[in-house]
Image (cartoon, rainbow, N blue to C red):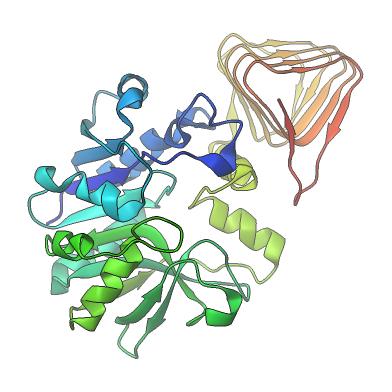
Length: 347
């Protein structure tokens, strides 16, 4: 039984700037809970108890503060962002036996973790990969695989071009491995992106005849591209739009979270953090997430929006399909209106 996980949390999060300017991506708040805490919580519920978290050394204090003390977590360091292969190698001395690897921006559903662990524990392959069948023709930024008739992975390529697609089946950044992985990581070349790719290590193992299993996630994905982006964002958070929809998905599951008396009109789902000052005649929701210490002025309307800690929205404002950064201000009478495919950001 696998009970250890290596969580890769040393990335720079450049596609989520400026939100990640001062906060590492895995520590971004997702509807009241840091991303890393959601990841560990799902894994713990699936039976994984030991967590090795790969971080940048300067971030250890803020990770310790964000991770609940109930989790058994220790840290190893990746000083330079040189790819997933090097990040996993940083955890080599801490791993004993089979283990899972999860990207720090991959919120894996508990039932899927259980499915991957069951398949890996049953046949004990070299690796078991988390897969999904895309609802659209082409998905950028993820590994692409070819399967045989028995569900074995026979080929994998990292971030292919449309012209080099192997199939409509993709690999999510959640895996189970045996300890042989480290020898293959040592052999990985540096890619054209200047990184050593985990997928290259897996491909080397395939060429050596190692067994690679694939476990599809048990959900249907839309054939509509906008809806598909929303659906996949709840799993893998790559950019600002993904972050927005991951938060919307989380608040929709929770419904209304209002820890204080609020007299304004609320349309669920809504989450209001601690210490917020909300005018009695504001309209909040649907799909509104207010971080701690947010201020909302009279006659303001906030829907489909994330207002991060300490930001202010003035009187007679409209905020829709938007993210307002930590400490930012929306001036009186302003309209900040994005769209489902173009989330507005206020810095």
